[in-house]
Length: 257
Image (tube, rainbow, N blue to C red):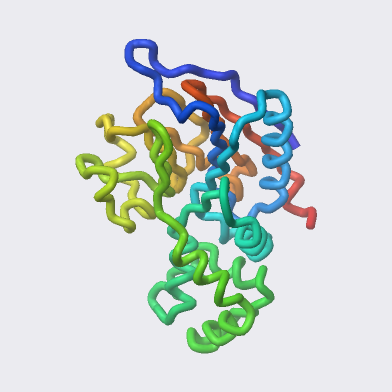
């Protein structure tokens, strides 16, 4: 495993730096995509980071797409469900939404989901989906995946706001008030959001679209660095007006179990 700690950065001095409330430290984690060992490594780095800083109330925000593609989707979903509660926010990404829709009877969603990571998630729950018809797959899902887990995913928020930061899986639609954003955009949008230099009212922290690096101090901060594709998982730390990046990478972690 390689570990990268980016230097602390403050926002553009020409305007007030975005802030989180005093007494709170936030860690936002990008798309995990079933890579449980990378997440375990990143959480260890976050724990070390906490030990080096004054004790504060800590909030942990997952930006969605916990599941699909990697081998540990079931373990991750169940662990976060068990840990649900104060201080932990797990946003619903488009991959979680596809699981919920598939479970609830949407054949079109199931066909789509199977081709972009759902097959691996089903395998992680012990479900054999090879050469099975949609009804058979759904029957196996109902038998293997706890209904309360699906309900929790279905009811997970699509956005979260604290201080001057707004968290969503994919982003927001420019020109629409943040409190009026559509769930589909929050989970799926790319353009025109990615090319927009608009002031959205808060800094948007998001995942969904893989980027090779994390740019701070703009109108948005993207944290999807390709946990499955590039073996790199990223967290953003926020305290007062400070922003910093914690990142782990590991090519050899995939074969471990």
